Image (cartoon, rainbow, N blue to C red):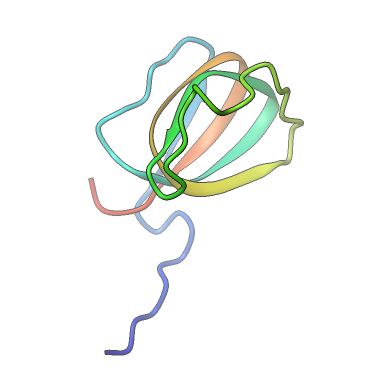
Length: 87
């Protein structure tokens, strides 16, 4: 079987700001647009969650993190979250 990776953003994206709890889909990438700190974040691809992720880490604007994020909430900043599949 020959598979072609989907383009980032092909399935849409969501602008997320402080305090908005995101769940109900899988996000393949999160790009920080204003320095951000996560209150919660869970990545099914790496089997890690808020319990082993440094929540006090500030991510600088311009940084993109990749994974299979099932849910997250920001303490500060803003991000664009890219959907991994059709919602």
